[in-house]
Image (cartoon, rainbow, N blue to C red; front, side, top):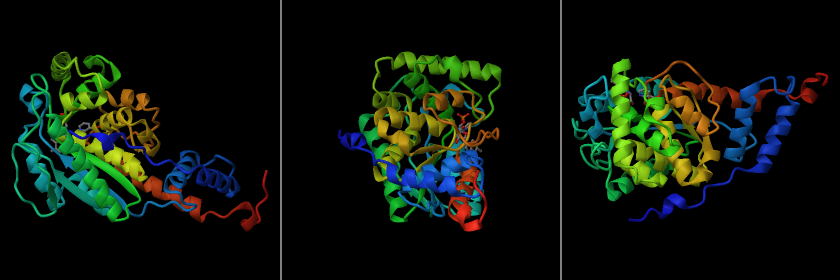
Amino acid sequence: MNHDWLFAACATPDPDCRAQALARQAQLTKPPGSLGALEALAVRLATLQRSARPNVDRVWISVFAADHGVADEGVSAFPQAVTGEMLRNFADGGAAISVLARALGATLEVVNLGTVNDPGEIKSVRRAVIATASANICMHAAMTPSQLQQAMAAGADSIAAARAAQAQLFVGGEMGIANTTSATALACALLGTPAIELAGAGTGLDDAGIARKAAVVERALQRHVAATTPLEQLRCLGGFEIAALTGAYIAAAQAGLPVLVDGFITTAAALAAVRINPGVRDWLLFAHRSHERGHACLLHALHADPLLQLGLRLGEASGAAAAVPLLRLACALHAGMATFAQAGVSTA
Ligand SMILES: Cc1cc2ncn([C@H]3O[C@H](COP(=O)(O)O)[C@@H](O)[C@H]3O)c2cc1C
Ligand SMILES: O=C(O)c1cccnc1
């Protein structure tokens, strides 16, 4: 099994572009620092895109869908059939991310990695089916080594497609009933945190449901206590779409394509990516803090300060899509504001 590409060097952000962008921000007609996070975003994007005038007009969104054997443990408020049904909804344009992508003029790629209720060929859904579902993590490793490899390669394929389309920003999303359980188990293993601290409501569990979900996660952690590397933890506790996201984030960082991370599940995949290849961290921007209980802890572990906190708890890349207009405004301000000299405005 060849995982060598995962450890190849990531691109390095350009310190000269950073210095130039900081110098320009200091000359724009505003008190220094007064545009706060919008300034930092413009400087960050200039550094990552190696450009004096960064922009995120061309946004690529990939939503990875897959089912999870751990759904058998009754950990979701919704039935497993929803994953496959939502594939058709994505394709028909009715899902939240379909609407958001349209509103942003972003490209939306949907990838079917394996669903129990498989809708079959759908125009505009990429089939990269690995199996009907990952295995129940309470009993087995979620994936075989070969399945892990396939899933991560499917994520890297999306980055190749995004680059071919000259995307300036990559956004990953996910759809998979019970995947907050898998993401919680992965996060607990990566962070060494007990399940009860990270388990949350997902699609809408009540307190008793959350307690049962935490017990399921603890069983999975016990079952896979021998998994001590991040790659093994991902293989044993993750799922196809989570591994695809991890592969996509690593490939994006290696290609020098900035990434905007979405919610709890994508952040768990991002933490796995950073643990596997630490150079990935430079390429990650964080869109929002989701309502899901464990998200704050994951963000803290990544030293991430997300832009928004809107009480979203959907996934599908919806929170990242909601933050794209802020990135665009940051770029527009950086490019379009007059300097003190140009406008004849006195400096301090
Ligand atoms: C109709 C519907 C659309 C969704 N879109 C994203 N999710 C979100 O909810 C699921 C995770 O929550 P849990 O672990 O509790 O199952 C994932 O599919 C996630 O993307 C959805 C869930 C539903 C029901
Ligand atoms: O934050 C998320 O990504 C999330 C939370 C709940 C359900 N699905 C996704």
